[in-house]
Amino acid sequence: MSTSPSPAASLTPDRQFARACAIMLCAALAMLAASFIAVERSARQQALTADVALAAAAEAASAQSMVAALDMLAERPVAPDARMQQTRLAWDTEQLLGQERDRLAQAGVEGETSALVEIAGEAAALSQSPQVDAREAARIAAALEARILPRLKLIATRYRAATEDAATRTRRTILVATALQLLGGAALVGMVLLPARRRIADWVARSRETDRENRFRLLHDSLTGLPNATYLHAFLARIAAGSERSMTQTAVLRVDLDRFGILRETLGQRDCDEIIRLTARRIRQAMRGGDFAAYVGHDNFVVVALDLEDANAAAPIAARIQAALRQPFSIRGGARHISCSIGVTLLSDDQPDPDRILANARIALGEAQGVGAGNVRYFRDGLRAEVERREMLYTELLAAIDTGELIPFFQPQISLET
Image (cartoon, rainbow, N blue to C red; front, top):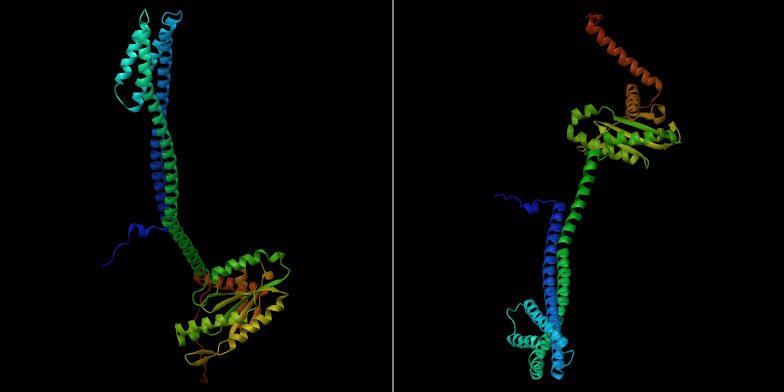
């Protein structure tokens, strides 16, 4: 029973890499958000304790100012500035109560301290009295110093310590969050990103290798391993493009196996394919280094000889190819003797066009085969003119027969001797 591949397995490496990056981004954002929340909470706690400590210190300062005003009233209840001290006492009392409420609100405590409210009420009453009682002022000052000031100083000290603790926690939170982010990032890189990158690198390498193989198959013949007609055409186009600037000659040799059709009928396709493979190997061995050979189908090969001094320099190459192919081919335990005909053309013979060059080589090959098996002929202008003339004559004869201008008649000829 076949199972369908999972969606993750069917993803290409580039999509897997994109998914890995998305996972890393989401994880990083989640870690960043968690770190931000933790740091923000620690910073808020630090700010709260600092505010409460400052409020307690301000409240203690107001209480201390009340004590100073009460001491002045206790010492000189009927002095000229007694009224000013009462006004100062009233203002400090009101400020103390307001600071107490603000501090308790910041600390999240409802209500007010009863002792402070009681003493503040007595101080407020004294500040409004038309005649100051020195003993009452001294008593209220003593109560503030004994019951309120120590408590406010203790609160300020405690919240300052809490502020320092909160600052320490904030720094620790930042360090821990940074360490976790670094460790998490390293873990994600090691567990997600690097494996995805390796898969992508392997995929790219396989893709390149596949592209090279496909390109090789596209431009080479599978039977012989030689470049095919497409590769040959592109190679000739590149050579022809620079032929006008070249100081040497380039020859194109078209090689055709003689009587190969008869061999195909007698030996069969498989043995003929083996002959083609052996022929390709022998042609490669007979070539010079830097020359180009291609198999263009059936029993036809093309050799491009580069950097020749003149047209005569192609003759030794053709002779080596013929000598290599005259050696017997061992097929089915028997020796098969094969010859070849070769047509040669130079790039300088005609227009630097790949199709024209190959056509000229084919015309020269036809001239060699017309003479007999195993011959070599060079292209010349008269050959193309002769081929074009025969083609035109053939076309005109067919047209004349079709239109009735020529009427063929059968005339039997009998030999009386036989």
